[in-house]
Length: 141
Image (cartoon, rainbow, N blue to C red; front, top):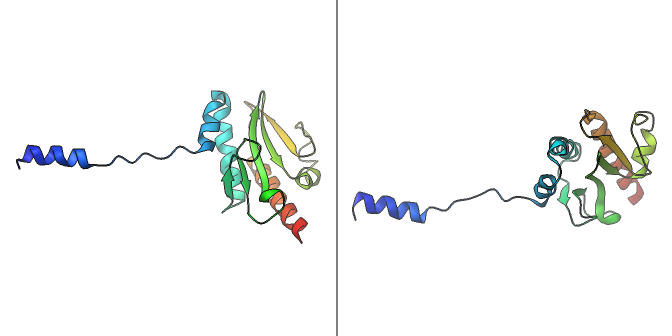
């Protein structure tokens, strides 16, 4: 076999490995460009606050995080986009306990909304996620 044939053979046998796009990546990509950067940041903050959590989109069709073996299928945090806000969904005790820090943001019983285009306080996001995990674990006792 000539050098040229060997190079062609190697090229044909080479497998191209692409990074699999996750459902969370797809969710973020479908959101408006002006929201995507903040969604990526909030995703990273949740992952940092809850290492080892399972990431899934089958519960409410939005990116969510869980630890198996707890109520609500172990779900403790989600994030979403609903114009004009990036929303963090957590268990109610997290919102209740941090109500003073959340005073400048629209909230519901379990959702805090951050306006797109304004800085999201990632330290607060991490606190909310950690408190949501604690609320889930406390309920299991």
